[in-house]
Length: 321
Picture 1: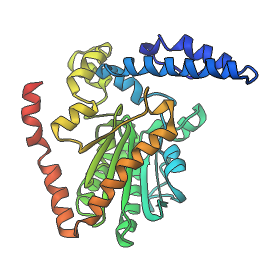
Picture 2: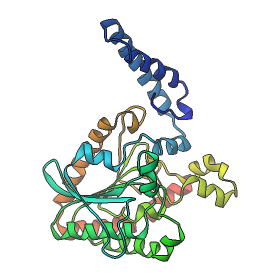
Picture 3: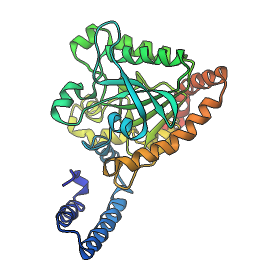
Picture 4: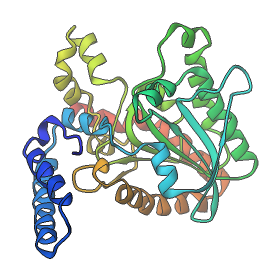
């Protein structure tokens, strides 16, 4: 049975019933029951997801079945060829990058990878990138600039890796260099926050001409648990912290941090990854065309202005909050 979140409790018994029905021999009557039950589940999901709290959105963004970068590559891109290593220290498996074709157009894909099962999560360091990951991403972006290929970035990380070896190898400097260099890379860059957009770990590859965000993704300066531990000295205040951080897609669109919200299937992207990828593609097509149509000087100027104005755009929003 698909994994359900605590606030999805009304759906759990129906999903179990659906699983039992789908295991039966296929007859017209069984199929009618299955169709009716699916409609009922979708209706309940729509009601539940229409009024999610910020903390519940955090839970959806972290759902173990939520499609990650590898899923999007398989569903949206052709002929993906991965690039490895930063040519300075190592290959960071928490960030994946490579050239591919998007609807016939050559592009560079960059993004975080969390892993699916326990073995892969350990291999991917749970999506916590080290400095060599950011340097690998920048190396690939410079190649994309050289060959005039648009860059499509998928953000899904709790944060940059805070371990001592990461600090020793200059994770803060690596992120800072990426912020500076991505601001002037002369090729279209579209950023998609697809899961967790956590702190500098996200921002280190999130400078672009347009920042898109899936409906139930989150984007914040710090994870709710870390915020609660600092402000209230109590990580259990994560619910209050989630509300205070204004980390949801509607909040961030209102504050001018993101440019567009990408809708998700009823119940979140994890319920139908293929439909979620189609919805991402529908928005990405238009945004990529708009950005690519600009001349180089205008595109770089607008990118600079976008990030310089973020603080100003959010002043009134913070006051209202």
